[in-house]
Image (cartoon, rainbow, N blue to C red; front, side):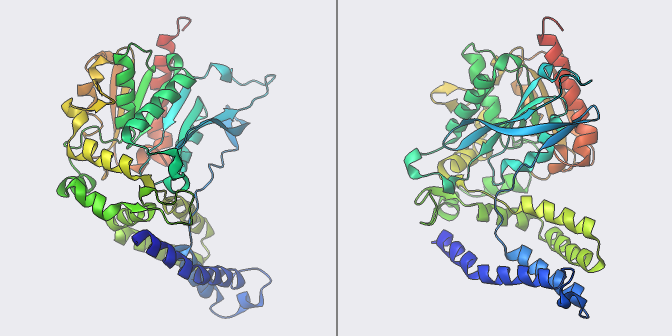
Amino acid sequence: MLYQMHEFGRAWMAPMTYWAEAGARMFSAQGSWLSGLPGATRMAAGYELVYRIGKDYEKPEFGIHSVDIDGVACPVVEREMLRKSFCRLLRFKRYTDDAGNLKDLKDDPPVLVVAPLSGHHSTLLRDTVRTLLRDHKVYITDWIDARMVPTSEGEFSLEDYVAYVQEFIRLIGAESLHVISVCQPTVPVLAAVSLMASNGEVTPRSLVMMGGPIDTRENPTQVNDLATNKPLWWFESNLIHPVPANYPGHGRRVYPGFLQHGGFVAMNPERHFESHWDFYQDLVKGDLEDAQAHRRFYDEYNAVLDMPAEYYLETVRVVFQEHLLPRGLWDVRGQRVDPSRIRGTALLTIEGELDDISGQGQTRAAHKLCSGIAESEREHLTVAGAGHYGIFSGRRWRTQVYPQVRDFIARHAAKADPAG
């Protein structure tokens, strides 16, 4: 019923948002007689603020059409390499002029970026991908909104997530691959590689784990406390709802994106209020650059997806309540997950000093679990002054984190290359 009420509210708000958008344009467009009236700037700013608060936010595009490599703009084409029921594997293919002075891009190491399935779309990692493209062949998991997946496709669990990651690694080729997992997927990625190692399969050359909940008993955050203070039945009774009839996934049980988004906002309501007020003031003052930065951020932040109920509930239980991975008690499809079986795969963990989602020590815990990896092959980075998003997006990511990730991958790509 809650999901249906949400859809009814969206439909009821739609005429108001269309009206607000039209008002913003009428009072700001050059040539409009309304834009010349006293107070027109404030009217336009107020209308746009109402519009942006009430509008629907669709999944954004990656929009990566070129990348600067050695001072040359190289075209980039987004390709779908594989489509599964709940995920697409994308490749960002770079094209270069072979007659130019560019390095041989065919020799760049391939990187699989495993994006989180935790409410936002994989486009949240746009800056991560764009930066990696300078020196790597980049693939990314693009998770599909569960409300768009018909029930005929079956369920999707955390174990299915692990199987997807394994399939993607095998498809790209583990022998030359480097895997970067951001936040939530650090757990299923570590499980996927552990199981591959236990089965005698070739594992990726390196794992880069960023801000993830490997062991949430370490320095628990507000997010962790919520998961442990409520029993699992509470999450199922209060947060799981069927998809309404106006979507392809009609009847599928999901954790709706709008509830997740409400939780995001509730963590820092003052900051979001101030951000919207500053946006209004920037429009009034004519500070269009800051106003556009606000639009870009909230176009991404407000675009959320639904998660399959079985996946969400299993994640809450396995990762946040029972801590099965760090306790060595997690079985995936009847096989025990044992990270100590990983050999020949280097490990880099990255944490933000001010991360309020995955506290310090939670990602670093992977080192204790991966005891089979030589100490010389393991590294850790704590990014001073960085919050959760700062370790994979923005200025700190580009200037402080990425150079170390790039060099780490390059070192281990060379070590595994007999010609290197």
